[in-house]
Length: 193
Image (cartoon, rainbow, N blue to C red; front, side, top):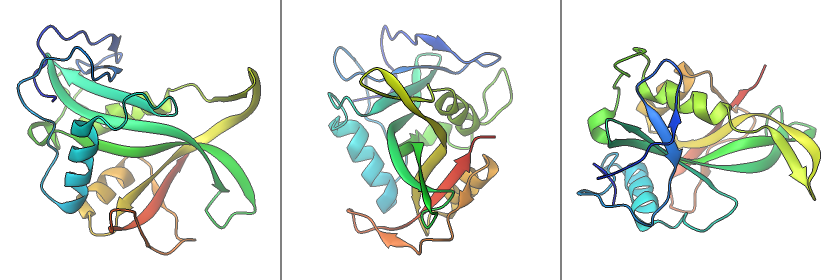
C-alpha cells in the first residue's frame, strides 16, 4: 500500500527541486491508500505491479519511489538489458537502463514541481539517467549503458507524448508487439549523448 507515508524518509534530493526519491521498499511502510495511476489496461498493470510488490527482493530491479511533502508521487522500476543498437534491428548490442514500469499517481499526473517548475516525469527521468552507467561482471567494468529504453502501449497517446517530450524516440525497426498482458506495445529509446 502506498500513498501518504507516515514517518517516511525520502533519502535523496533532486537538486533544485522539492521532489525527493528513495529506493522503494515494501517493508515497514505505513500508508493509507494504494498506488493508483489510472484505470486503463496499462495503468491497471502498473497499479498491480506496484501494489502486489512483485518487485520486492528481485536484485535485478532498481525500484525507485518519488515523493513530495511525504506523499508518493510515483514509481519507476529499472533493469539493465542488452538490446540491439541503435535500434532493435541494429547490427550491434548495447546495454540500456530498461524502464519496465513507470507510473505517476493520478493526483500528480501532468503536475509540476513547485520549486523548479519542471514536470514530475522530467525529474523522474533525470534521476533514472543519473543511475550508474558502468556494467559490471565479476567486479570488472565490461561496458557502459548507452541510453534509456521502455515499452509503451500503442494506444497510450498521453504516455507516448510524455516520453517524446523527454527525448525518447519510437523504435520504428520493430512493429508493435503483444506484451504478456495482451497489450500491443512499441519500444521507445533515448540514447545518451
